[in-house]
Image: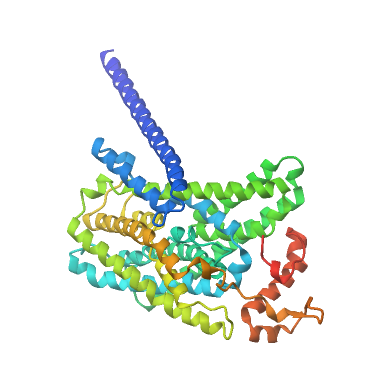
Length: 524
């Protein structure tokens, strides 16, 4: 009987301990959420107050505020749980609304007119930058006594520091004032992040047997495969959502259902891609593009207005939350205890130099190739445009930190000194580029692009191959042969062929506002 009482008492105490632990964890979660919600409110107020400031922007304010609060928590409580970084929070909850809104709000005519240049920067540029960073790290890090890194780690570092963060630059550019520059910076930022994540996933499948020709071809195959299937998944789900909205017309009953369906289908595209270990960023981005091109025209007028503002609001909140999150993570004691500060500082400086060099190695040559491909067109990337594109791409953000945690930490949170140094160095590069490069961005753009010159900036070319003027000055559209159009202007030819296919087959089935003229093509 006595043993039964002891057993019962033991089970009772274990249950109570588990209950207290669960209550403590729940309380810590409530405190963390309350803290970040309060910081978001403060960040929005301060950001509005300093909106016209020459040096500060929303991203800089958020990361400074996060660092300050993280330092206070570190000094007062030394609570590592409140400061721990969870990369799943970023990838599962914060990135989807940002990327979806980017695709949903993008001016599609500008984006697709400049699609070739965007892919040069965001696709080929990532491969060039990743190669330079990987080679530089492989050569220099052993000399810093960081000897526990394997080839897969060096390849991962190349992809981690190829993921740009152009939020600060986009906050200073306007689509109407500098349409060409804005579309290139915006388009490259999205494609760059997606390409970097896809390349990171390909590196994760790399076998440590050695990097030979066969392994390199295998990585290229994985990259092309992940890029293609992720894009197709986003397009298919965007078209399905458009067809459902067109067929059922929820708006006659409730606009809430229309907006809910659009948001949930977009999130589904992201989660399905992550489920299959593809690129959720690419999927949700192209889902946003096709949903705005077709599905948005199938909803009621009130849903059109509400959806644009709702998606933009969630995107803005997520962006501020990411920078706050990065700022508070700076004082994560679990990492600081393992870091060799000297080696981390040197590796941080080296990574910053390699990032800048890798960026310059493709921006200026690719700009020359793009200008050559444009032929005699006046719409070319001038040197000041190239400097802004190069400078804006030096900044690194939350995606780089999240990838670093995925590569250099384990599920139990343990890591060796070299891995902790890599996470510390990544955080240092993100902080430096956001605070220093981000602060200098506004005066740099004001110097290179004064307001009195911005109205003279070129926009994307019109499709001159299909439009001629009557004697009275009115425009008529002519159908030239596909081959002659393709040879004369490949971009306009593809655009014209797509427009004809879109008007004849896609819009009647999926919706989209009916046939459009050249000036309105691909505009939401």
